[in-house]
Image 1 (cartoon, rainbow, N blue to C red):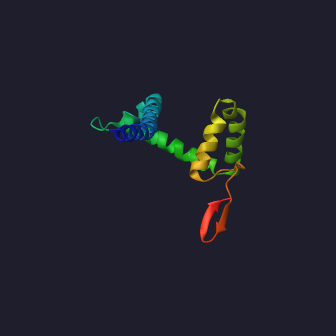
Image 2: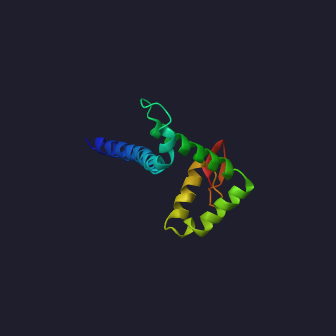
Image 3: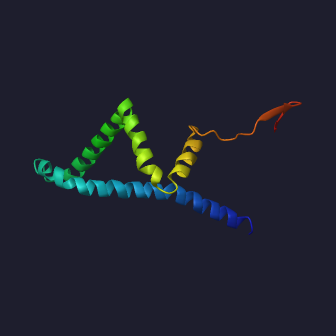
Length: 129
């Protein structure tokens, strides 16, 4: 019985960490689609009534904007703009530096000079030194 509680808590926390960002992402996508509906509604009236044209066009417009932002972010000017935005706006948010550092460490792209234990080989075994 004692082993069941940590398993349940671990599974619950893992599920929350997985589901909550996906849920928030979908909420953000649907909210963005609602704000774009006014722009695409004149074009949606040109398509057949049976087609959910407003939603499809709103999603298509958002995907095109995301693609263009992604292409622009890969350029030198885009990288410079992102770094400027991070330094001027995001660095002022509490916890941003911590979350950024943790995310970079998890993905293996850490730029921080963090202490890492050296491994010393002793008689065919690796031990921290």
